[in-house]
Image (cartoon, rainbow, N blue to C red; front, side, top):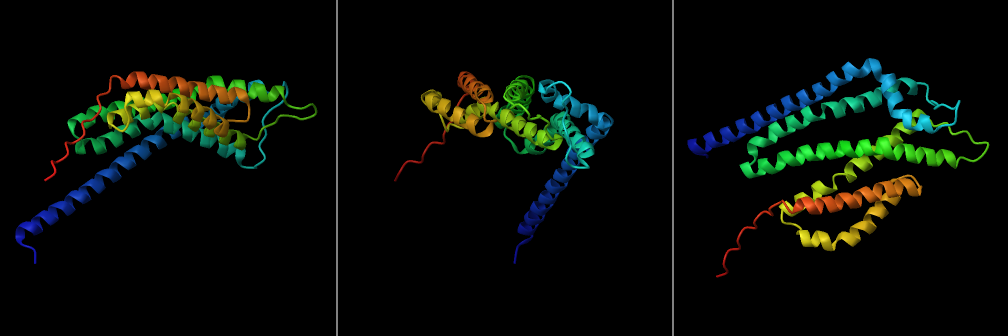
Length: 256
């Protein structure tokens, strides 16, 4: 049998758990609602939004050539998917704020000072990676592919397959641009030192080119356009890590 004090503690823990669940539900609803609101605000321009996304490929196609839709519903659903993706990106700052507001009360002050810059820098670097892919990688890749299209072959890409292709590259370049954040977090947690990052530099160069060869289209241009920024970002991460103070490890208890 539990005494009254233990029962009160048990009730308080249960109430606290339920309170956290309710707060989590509310914040998830707010985050989802922000995405839906952005989507509804943009849905009227869905065809135009897809045209902007497809512009790098359209510009590389021969005159008189256009993209195709092999699925009956693709001309409707593909622009909707693109618009939803754009809506999520636009609402992402508010979504991240809801995440931050949920976890912040449980963090120490020094953890808050570290977590907020990480969230913001991760978001900005991911957007920078997507922008780099759209403005530099896509035009170069599509022009390269169009130039090597054999005679008698018409380069007419399906809009659904094109969407899958660009989303994949957006994710690849967005995540690769997170390299400095990963380095700084590892240094802050004391898992690696700046000297170890410097010593690992030559291995990272090889890894960057291997990753680029696996995840990018099979052309040298796109592989270099992923590997070189990764290497430069790795160096940038080493530079920024100089301003990170590693977390002190707890002192070991003396052996008896």
